[in-house]
Length: 114
Image (cartoon, rainbow, N blue to C red; front, top):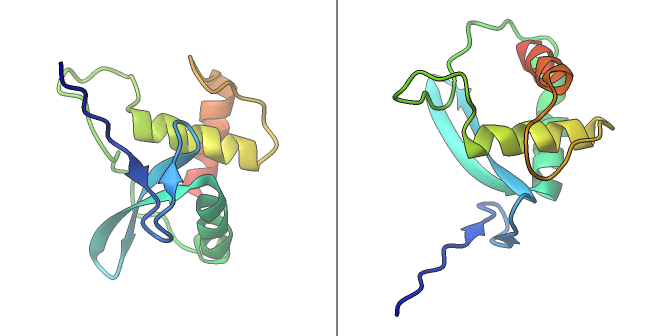
């Protein structure tokens, strides 16, 4: 028997990201698209650093990080982690597993649109 284990590491400091305690962040800068895996702590710092700029920036459109081949309205794991991390950082109660309330999803989408 063979068992393969994959660990997600924080790209900034190299720490192991435990299940549900971090996320992959996609962002654009100077015409380039980037992705970075961050622990919850580094994600909070990233969001705080970006907030002054995103608060005054013009939104040019929304392109989801991933689109399911079936075109379903579901979310991928990275997006769910991002929503949960954002909700927790903004004082909202969300479970570590299962569906995320529509009100939380809507608040997250509105915050990303700003």
